[in-house]
Image (cartoon, rainbow, N blue to C red; front, side, top):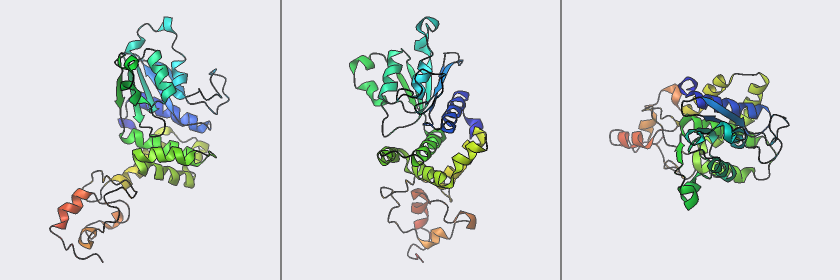
Length: 273
């Protein structure tokens, strides 16, 4: 899990966690040159009081903006070869700033169903002419980011929280539900108080996520979205299939559709008791 992450992602996620510990939106960003050297980094400081960024305390203090702020044009003549890594899909402001800073490579961990703006890459002729390479990573990075950021949202008094969360639910509803679970448990607050290392936090959170997302029969992603749009909504799983589950797996995660279809033909599908 954590040890499988590339170094830029470890750095960006550590910055997101630092932002959370400083009571602001947990997003981190790093910028690397073509040789993989770290040239700049930033974290969200919208609600921060730090003096290390002139943007701190303003609504411009997004992680990407703080990272971009350090790139003086004369010092970075090869900026077009740089790569921006950010834990969350850039918003319109950050995407636009990245374009105008002449960075041509953007790599983001989690899709932002509320304010993500990378689709603008193909919407305007001016931006399209820049031929910006955009890579979405997803996977465990997306899950962790959405869990951490939704937990932050559940924990603050924001009148638009549900609007924001509904946008993210379209991306990964399981992660948002886990964000609520971790917030209710006070997990992240306690981890911050205990100064728990980010690698331990990441591994514990992803272990919980995988516990829910892994089919207990085949060990693959069960594809369950934990809402009424999922294929399993209103579906009764035959008792013969449920009996195949190990005791320690029962009630922990959904069986995937492939396994249900596979075993329906060989087990007693009429027994649901």
